[in-house]
Length: 466
Image 1 (spheres, one colour):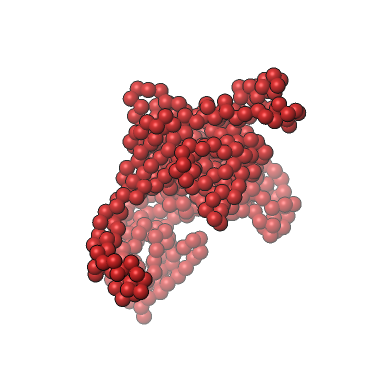
Image 2 (tube, helix red, strand yellow):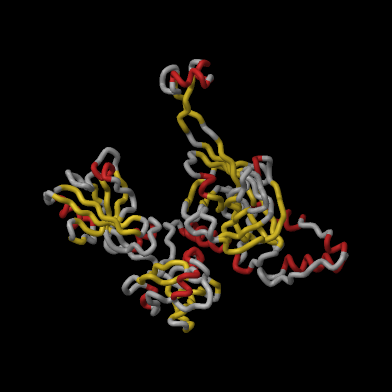
């Protein structure tokens, strides 16, 4: 038994990623407890309650509770009033800084007018939303501990985790109170989940249920490797397929919150697509996997690194890049001002290069303009497209043109069918690369309008008039 205890102690104090992975050799080793790890981590996992005001229908006639009568009254204003309600939502969070920074999911606090944090010792604090990032589904809160040093969980490099590692999930499922479940890492680098823009998840079979969102996924060294975010379920309960945002992504969002600045992700100045079996055969590569480069931004980071259209990028800092989602993750978790080593194939030869990670430039300036007049784009708000604006709106490789920011209802642009994120490329055969030139062109009268634009990566053309 002493040997088993010493083995556990060694695992707990070893550097992250360095502990020895062994199969239990005897009954005593199998009976080891996670209690010491839970005692260390549990105080840093909090419950989060949110409230927001909504307008609810108040019925003054009990007849409207009957579906038969609702057919006639339509559930409309007759016999009804309106009252305000404050529905509560429930989630979990993790203290990652003794000064009171807390990580949770963006969907837990979305639309909240009041955010309350309840610590493990039942103390309650009103929290301030410091940063919300829907693209990663992460949010950073801060509470004022009034000079007290709060318990916190340290990050672990999520790239050191392996399939089969033991993990614990801590959170508040179904609002029953703090709960710990155990399991293993079932899979890594899950990218085809479709939960966030940066899909790159740790999958676990540790039970995760509604209310666990924003809670901690830790390894047996007590370090944070992920934020529990979603489950795959047909019933609403856990079926052993849960997903967590890796700690390396969480760390970059927390770093931005600490500095108080806007969240700016690294940009490489390239666009590409996942290398499928058909593409691999056409490029004479042995197997699919990687990212085929479609285009590089002139004088952007990728262009300066020597990457060209047709190259197949396969690694970033020796980590495999099997699809475009994996590349986006590796870039997003990089540090601005640094560079990463990339490996790519060109004509069957593996080439290495240093790719600088830079902030996307906002050139030209966006210069938002509301278009007025009797033309197909009347009522649209447009802006000059730049790499910075393209990244902000998740439009990979869309670096030039004029983008529609929004379309007002009841206007010609809406009736024509234009939408936000449509990119206007030309009007009556003339290209316009900034919003001011486009507005000037539309101010000129014309008997016929021909608009070429791009939507979801596909070129479209509409024409109006004689």
